[in-house]
Image 1 (tube, rainbow over the protein chains, first blue to last red):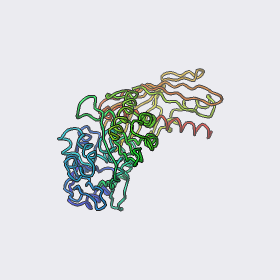
Image 2: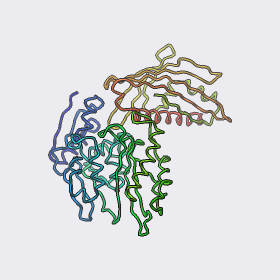
Image 3: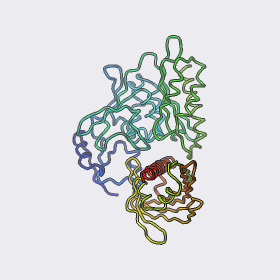
Image 4: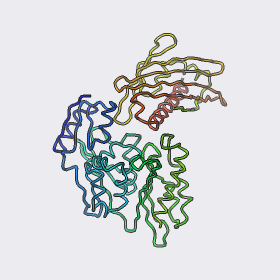
Length: 282
Length: 149
């Protein structure tokens, strides 16, 4: 395996390299996914562009409107330990803290995680439930993509070949919104989820559900939005969520693998959706 | 890994049979297939390019029709291919059954797929989904071709 390694200090040269080498170039952020693919020989680029020296891609800060900006090269561990991220929502830092092990979290980056588009990852469903967007830059310009629309298939995103994710932006949270991320791990604590559920929920003054946003991980080729559950929840009160949670089975597309049969995962998706909602309505 | 794919085509069975047994033409219905040619003894050589995210595979191999029964509308096929760059191979045995249902034809393909070497690293979920996509596109294309004839 031989490739030319580039490590630009600014975003501009990185974009130029990517535009110039096209499919023969691959970006590397934290490298937790890319290095594995390179070592397995599944990825054989002629050029690897390292992003770690580009300072503008780092940082975690509240935005002026009360949202949160996470630089694409911020590590999972940095988000997990960020007081600003925790002030935004503890569920957000919980989701990042639930990824693999500390060694991985110290290395894996937020942008790399999203670009890798593994459907079993933890941050994407939580970011999508918060309504987060990514900013994608190329030498042609800049655009904003909802995290919910970023992954389109296993390991496949809607990013163009010359685009780099520069940041993730979370909108301000509407007063009274609750959020949670629950991950079902029947094997080991550092495993990928068998099913995971990220949800935000806002209650009306009478205690019924006014709005819900629910995304599941590991039960389809991308994070899956449970729209039917969201719709069914509206107007419901605490203690009246089982029926809505049961609708999740119609929305997901799990497959048989080492973490369980598709039927088992379907049942667990229902159980864990109900648990997540129950926690939010406690 | 075993998969079953079915598709309905709005043309009579005999027409679909002729179409499927013309391997080079039928193979053009599989997205990513290039240069299918007969290599003798009822075998065909060809390549299939598959992309999973950033990973591009080029599977080089052959396909043989190992049994066929036109009256029953059934056939058995065997495919073997490898990607020598990545280091991995697939072996598939397929049984094809065409059944006429009210003037339309149901195409049923049962596949038993073995994935060897590094290709296995993708995991079953990805491989199954890719197989589903290929077979789904194949059936749709056959249906389009058949009704255009």
